[in-house]
Length: 319
Ligand SMILES: NC(=O)c1ccc[n+]([C@@H]2O[C@H](COP(=O)([O-])OP(=O)(O)OC[C@H]3O[C@@H](n4cnc5c(N)ncnc54)[C@H](O)[C@@H]3O)[C@@H](O)[C@H]2O)c1
Ligand SMILES: O=C(O)[C@H](O)CO
Image (cartoon, rainbow, N blue to C red; front, side, top):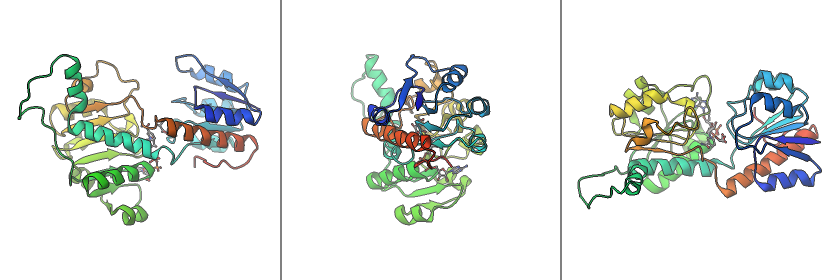
């Protein structure tokens, strides 16, 4: 059996596949594979490990309907036409759970960095602009006791809420497609409407999937409904906020600051005004990028591939 990997994954996953006599071909160029190159490669293979934002759309799936399994190197699957994959009986696997703690750490890091203007002040030091100590400048805001609003209280949202409760005793409100009574019991989160989430959150952290309902959800009109001291955090997908509107909301001081691990497009242009703003922190989509998490993801991917190649149900299927 032959597996194509459209990037690189942790050695533990590759070793597991090799130990099962799987032949592996990897995309090693330092530019992303094109749609045509991906189809050409997959036509020579039995399975795909999709690294990054390969579009697993109807065109790709029709051209590669012989694939026995596609294993995503992500929990998010907004890049996949799941309905067509189902119709063509191509199982899709993802990596839920194992990346929740690392991604929530990234959301927490961004929240703290924004609240103390850390990235902006770091840049000032590098630029030789460290001014003498002054008690009234470069002031941040404190998080203790502030209200955390979670949009999408799933695996990562719950991890983020737990950290904020443990460190800052933050009361948690959340909005979801449906209520999560178990999480409500576990962390004492209160379910509110989307409008209430906007009105009550001092920190609003986004952890939903990118779907037609969440695409472009955060517009200027939505930012206007948030508190003027609010921090907006997005580690989910850049497509969930409208970047032009976010810039305007920050310029007009409709909200206090923003922390982004995801942007639209990615990579973000180096001249993006967000990168010059003092209450903004941007990271290059490193949510799950720790040694431990990437190893765990690679192991799950190997399990999904091995099951799919045997025609067995995937242990971690996208449903
Ligand atoms: N920055 C990164 O590197 C990184 C890493 C992992 C995941 N992510 C993103 O985070 C997302 C969440 O991951 P997860 O593991 O917590 O997923 P999850 O499925 O456990 O949680 C998602 C939650 O969002 C809710 N939801 C879905 N649509 C909604 C809507 N329209 N309105 C309100 N709530 C809605 C779901 O009910 C669920 O509770 C992923 O889909 C992915 O896009 C990013
Ligand atoms: O969804 C995920 O797991 C991350 O965003 C990596 O793509």
